[in-house]
Length: 474
Image (cartoon, rainbow, N blue to C red; front, top):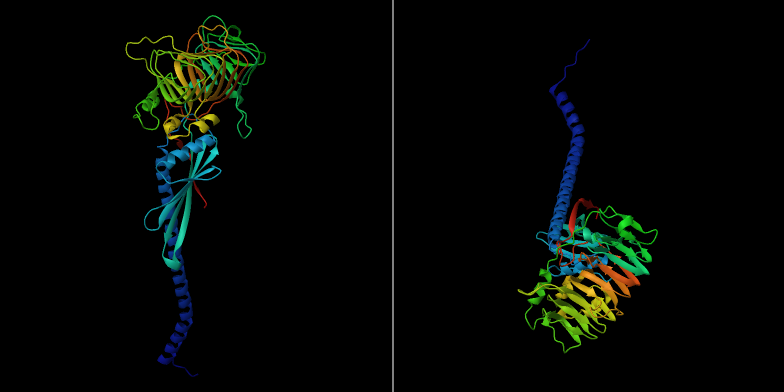
């Protein structure tokens, strides 16, 4: 039997074959490794770009929330009025566009450095809620290789809530509330057909002799409320079927702050909005102050802007009159007695608030620029009795009212009261309260919005709701 001896050449040949077999495999692995590395680099680059875009969006959100924190609300704003006010406030120090149908506030792109920018959009989520969406953009590379990554974040902001108990009632009175026949107190139905029946509500804190609330005939859409020790049987004389509550919590009338209005008196003479002193020789007045003790008698007069009334005063509108703007009382001068304050009207008195259709159409000039900022209150005279002249036993005494909050010591309308009120009707007097003999129609729209000027909480900004923060898919 012959034996074969393996030579060194044979070993080398086998190794060569193995190497040749491994080369394609190693080459494939190298290509796969390079491809995977490139993909990882792209993924890392995209992830970094997405992170940059998200950080830009969040920075933009913080910036716009800061800007919104300086947008104090003017009055009891709700729905479209809320969005309109925010647009006006933001445009004072930020370039924004407000589209033709006024459904969105757009903040055009604001650029950072290194290809970073953000833009925003504010819409109404519901009548008391704003929706802020911020888009962050990050562009990397240049020329044909440039690419842009986009991320979006969003948050809701609620209109600031005025937690004043008095603002929860359409009519809130320290004194008695008396209506004669044909009364209709109801909540307003909005443009979307939603009826706010509960806004047509009445509260009386009267504890004297007689009824706290008395209604001859008609309808109240909300609840009529009194507080213990009153009872329904003792304190209310209302039509059958009226909703009542004799366990309501007592209401303390809100304290009034005149600073927003006093600032108007300090506007230098000759400047738009300057308040002039009452002059009895003119049938038309713009932004007037009635000094204490002058007791003016107006005929068929037109007053536009602010009517600032110092105390004491006995003001009479003897033959109608139209007031478009805001009526506000001032502090009594030092040494003057503060009693017998009246705003008397005979025949027809028409009062239009700043936000009413007549107010929007009338108060357009520069002389009303500061007055327009005080929307939300129309009559702020808690020391004044408003109504029939003292020396006239049976005046016609009709009143038409379209405006914001109404605050007086007492209101006495003998015949026709027609009112559209955005806010509450506040009666501060403990005895003589609200009296409307015949044909009282009041359509009331309350709001969870901020306090009107003159009340604590006025000028608060919309409030972000952290629970609504979310990242969106662009």
